[in-house]
Length: 381
Figure 1 (cartoon, rainbow, N blue to C red):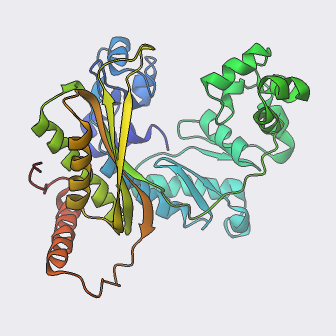
Figure 2: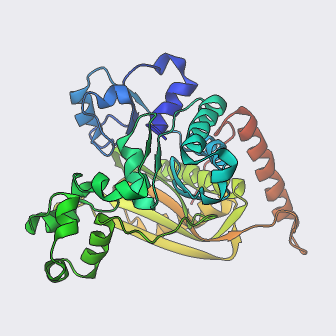
């Protein structure tokens, strides 16, 4: 998807269309999650500090992220993808691999399928998608990145090597800054440099992973599309503009995050056995880093109830906070299990039935009137 979070904001609010929109925070601690293409013309990019984005584009309109809304739109798009092939592997809310091998005859070839897919997404959702077509996942991903926005680029099997070689090595999926520095020490800057490098040099300086990257540089990628891959965790976190010290404020934030995580679990018909509290402290270490602490607790049975998750994570906060000030708080749920809503516990207690009925009512209200229309009261230690 093209500038997905910003595009959703422009879709929902026509007054933002054609303007430089930044999803994220503009404070010194804020981070750009996504920038519209109007903002990108000023050099604004994802993961950039918000205050830096503001300096580059004084007229940028900053919008707070609405992850629940983005997930809702992503589900609509995913359903459209599945009209073309059941072999869909999501990478994130706004990106997925599709294996269309079995659909080529039905749609008259890869290019015609891609054109139809782009049209359906735009007609049914109102957003644009860029499509890369290639014989391997790596090349398809690079092609989709290069043809943005609203593009379509097909790389035939006999053109893969010629397509890859001139590109910078950073284009390879997963080659981050650390790997780039290691490769630069070997005078490897382009994909061609990596493809032509001596294997013994890669082994000596990088290890076995160097040979993996070299295979990718040569267009060899044996990884197949894995359909039906499910999430392993659900999480919410928030960085504060000012250090958080007050207990009641922390409890409110943790309760809201717990409810959000629980709501997403129920939406996906899933439950979690483990909850984790994440805290980023405000006092830097000797290396200039902000320490990140995590504390976890487990349930005897998997849960999808915000009250239970909030109580567990608040207990973790109370046991580990000890007067510390924090710049970030987060709640995550893991050890995920699928839930059969039609098979209720045989000896479910009356309180459990009431809580389940309450959650279902809240979910219906949020679905009808918008996320967060109903919130649970503050928790107390």
